[in-house]
Image 1 (cartoon, rainbow, N blue to C red):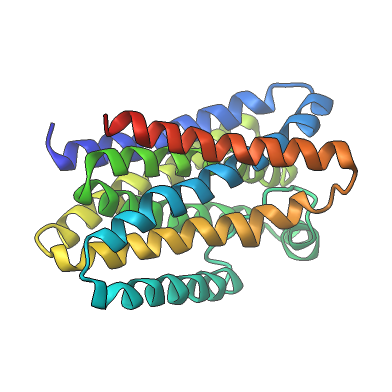
Image 2 (cartoon, rainbow, N blue to C red):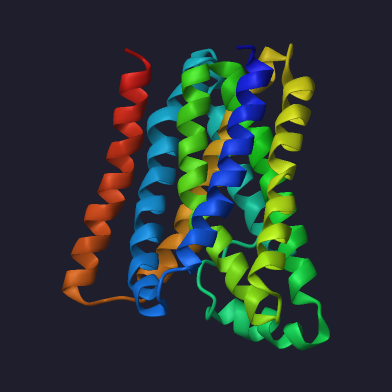
Amino acid sequence: MSALSWIVLFCLLVGMLSVMAAGLFLLLPQPLRTRLLPHLISFATGALLGAAFLALLPHALETVPDSDTHRVTFVVLLGLLGFFVMEKMVLWRHCHHADCEAHHAREVNELHSGVAGPLIVVGDAVHNLIHGVLIAAAFLVDIHLGIVTSLAVMAHQIPQELSNFAVLLHGGLSRTRALLLNTLSSLTAPLGGVIGYFGLNGVEWLMPYMLAIAVSSCIYIAVADLIPGLHKRTEMSASIQQVLLIGSGVAIIYLTHLLLHE
């Protein structure tokens, strides 16, 4: 298969499987969903951090001369700051709790005016478009790196899509319409992949810096959006479970990376 085929295939898989998994998750009884969601978020945190530090960043640093490593890490820093600004502009919404402060302060209050639904869909579409570009950058460097990156994105996408479903359903949409809107927004991922392929193919010098942006994306989502929610549970048993699940996410990415390179 060509690199473009790999990119489109995995962008579609990441988007569609995440939406389907979130949709099936909503069919579970509410008490069970409430218990399982924090575990999903813990696992996603580990997967994102594992992909950032064990796959993406090493590849980015390996492909530049030693004199340019500071440029790569500087781009990681700029990416973190950039994602912070984007989130402030409501273009990058990663709240994974339907009852989080951001939803109550802004989105839930806007549901009655019909604003929150379009914001969620547009924000998710932009988010998926960016992920598509970053997945394309990873595949253009190495097929195995692209697969690992896609797995990490998918681990994060499931709780993200679940959050989107919750807000849309709270706004009065039917499950079918909410599923349709989330499916349509997921289709921007392969679009981003195609844009990334044609925009980055042939400019190899850009690849380490695109990977650096992917690193900052994974770190920002994990540290700024997922971990604060985990800190809300302070009991010892919950903390131990979180550490174990984060470690499991890291281990899955590490083992996948090793197996693909054998």
